[in-house]
Every structure is written in structure tokens, then in C-alpha cells.
Length: 586
Image 1 (tube, rainbow, N blue to C red):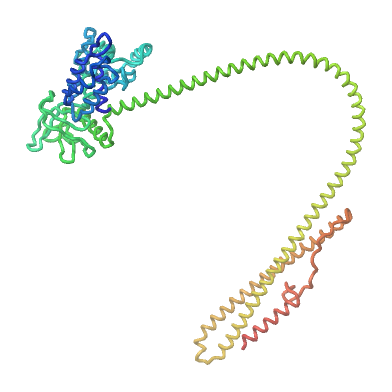
Image 2: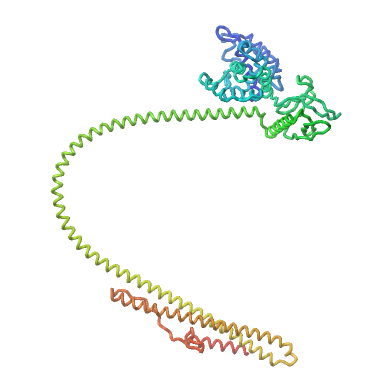
């Protein structure tokens, strides 16, 4: 909340408490006194001339259309800078409004506690005028007071109060809140001192931004001696005083994102030690017990984390979140109300449509009754005519059934013949496919034989070359024989390997020949099947001409068995081999 918003709520209480004349207007003298007090407490120079110029002596008076708010903003609030004494400012506004609104006889709390509740109300109330505090904020405040008093929260009791509150109004004014807490309804069993201490603790946290305070021992930086101080933790610093009256300030510890706090072991006869580290200095502090030590460490860490993240104090951030949740819930409620209103409108329109449809249906039923009587008469006439037509149709049906029986017999014969033709066609197609596969296998076998013959010719040429090299080696001199003996043995091994490879190729050729014979046999069988089916089909239709197998070529027989080449191809291969041999001998 901006500083101006914090100041406006107490000022509103003070302004509404001013006396008005019979016409309902506030006198200029009261406004001058209020303005002077505000300027004094807010450290703003007072300008009475501006007030006179703003509120001219005319028929409208001080509460004219100009109003007091424009003057307050322009000449007072906009000039507020620096720190102000919040307690004194609030007490001045409280003094002006409490006399007129506070009922002391019905309260079981002191006037000081009532003032603090009033200040807490200004912090928690909604930013709408007239100011009220909603039930959610009332519950939050009562919970904090109960926690500060060390009691247990009575949710059922508050729910009963909340139900009664909703029946009357949406929230409480400041004086109704003071009356609620001062009645002791939610602090039964607690003495007045405990209630006052709880109110003071919540006031310090919410209004004065004092997150924690208490006596602790601090170690000096120069003398290194331990001195008891009253420490006050605020959202941006820790201030320490001689006593809790806050009159003699001894120093402060500025807290920012670079600070940290850590626990220390006991030393120098001091226990429950912890250290607050800042960029320039570090402060050793001793708490009264372990619980206090842990509380101080936790709350200081929370303050440092808030500073690092650039967030406001926890209680202000929590208030912002609660307001955001209420606004979201209110928006959702308005949306639901709008939807319900739309649904109600649509439902009314549907009801009107249904009423119109009901009337239309009633009229249609009456018309249908007249139409049904007319149709009944017509039906009797048509029934007689239908009986005559039915007898005539039965005779025609008998004749048609006889004709259909004859046509069905002919159709069955034609279908039987068509199925036989389809079976013959399928079998013929299968025979053709077998013949094609046999021819393909024959071509593959022929290709393999040709490749084997080429490899055989290559190996033979290599053998001839090795043999000639061996003869040349034997004709060399005796002195070279020992040197070439090793070479000869190497050549012989190579020759032996070549012979082995040649034998392996021979075996592969024989196997290829056997595969070829099998493929050839399959081809002959396929050709026979083709001829057989050709005769059957020609006999049945006389229209199908089968694919005939190719003409057979006379096989060429070698000393290894039937060759995979013709006589002319073999002669050509032999001629090439002789030419290669002659070229090698030269």
C-alpha cells in the first residue's frame, strides 16, 4: 500500500467525525484545524491562504464540488516526504473520531488497546469508502490474536458469528470491530493483560512493521564486551536500544540481500549465540534460550529472503494475496450470477417455445382426428378394391413363379458351365506360371555354367604359365638350383592350390549340371502340363493358344559329361584358349 493510501484511512475517520451544521456541511474552521494538525504531524508547511482560496465563502460552502479531498491531495499529501511518526499521526486522528464513536462502558479492554485495534482495522480494511473489514480479514485478525494469547482457535464459534454477520451486512466498521474484540467473545478465559499484550503484538507487526522485538546480549566491536540491548526487527533493519522504551537508540543493522544469519557454538560463557553477517560488519548476538534463538534466526532469514526477492513484508504480501483471492472469487461469483441469469432467460424462452409447441400439437391433434375419420371411410372403400386386386395379383404371381422356375433352371446350368470354365482358366494360369518359373531356373543354371567355364579357362591358363615357369627354372645353372629350390617349392604349392581350386570348380560345375538337369526336368514337366491343358482348353472352347516351350538345342558332350554350351560355342572357347597358350609360350 502506498504511503498516501495508508494516510487516507485515518484522515477519513477524522473527517467523518467532524461536526456538521443543519445543512449537513462541515465548517471551514474545523477543516482549518484538521489541516493544521495534519501538516504539523506530516512535516508539511501549512498554507492557510490556500485553504481559504480553495473554500471560498459562497453558497456551496466547504463541502462544495471542490470538496476537501482535492485540497488534501494537492496541498498536504502530495508534499509528504521522508519518515513520519505513524503512532502520533494515528493518535491524532483517533482523538478526533474516538470521542464521537467509541463506547467505553461496554468494553473490557483499555482505550489504548481500542486505539491499536482501530489502527489494525485501517490496515486490514478494504480500499472502499465507507471503510469496512470483511469476514475473511476478521477471521485472520482473530486468529492472530488467539495465537498471540496462546489459546486455541474456535472455528465453530466464528462460523456461527459469520453466519449471523452475513444476514445483516457484508462487514464491520472500525467501532463494531472494537466492540467485537472488546466484548471478550473470542478471548474467554484470558485476563485483560494477556489480551492487551496480544493486541500490542499484532499492532506492532501489522501497523508499525515490527516483526519481532526483545532483549538480547550483543558483543561490542571495540571492547569485545557483552551488553544487553532491546532489539527491534523491521522489514529492512534491526535497531537496538538501551531499553524497551525506545528512547536511547544505540545502533542499527541494515538488512539487504547480501546479509545472512547463522548459528554459532557457545563460547565466552555465552549460550544461544548466532551471527548476523553484513558486507561491512558482523554482529554476534546471544538470545535468552534456544527457542528465542531459533525464532530470531528464522525471522531474520525470512526478512533477508524477502529483500533478495524484492517482496514486501510477509504480512503485507499475505494481505495482498488475500485481497487478490477475494477479488478472484468475487469475479467468479459475478460470472456465475451472469451465467445463471442467462440460463434463466434462456429457460423462460424455452418455456414460451414449449407452450407454443403444445398449442400447435393440440391443434394438430384435432385436425388429425378429423383426418382419421375421413381416412377410415376411405380405407373401407380401398379394402374392397384391394381384395379384388389381390385375387388378380395372386393369379399373375403363380404364372410368374412358373416362368421364374424355368429361368432359374437355365441359369443354374449356365452357372455350372461358367464355374467349369473358370476352374480350367485357373489351372491353365498355374501351368503357365510353372513353365515361366522353369524357364527362369534354366536361364540361371546356364548363367552359372558359363561363369564356371570362364573360371576354369582362367585357372588352366594359370596352370600352363606355372608349368612353363617351372621348366625354365629346371634349365638354370646348378649354382642357381639351390637358390631357386625354395622358389620351386613355393610355385609347387601355388600349383597345388590352383589344382585344388580347379577340382573345386569341377565339383561346382558338376553340381551346377545336376541342378540344370533338375531344372530341365521341371521345364519338361511344365511343358507337358501345358500341352495337356492346351488340349483340354482347345477341346472345351477352341479359342486359347498356349505358349510353347522353346526349341531344344543338341547338347555337346565332353569327357566330364554333357556341357552347358553348344558345339560352336565350345569351338570358339577352344580357339581362344589356343591363342592364349601360343602367346604365353612366346
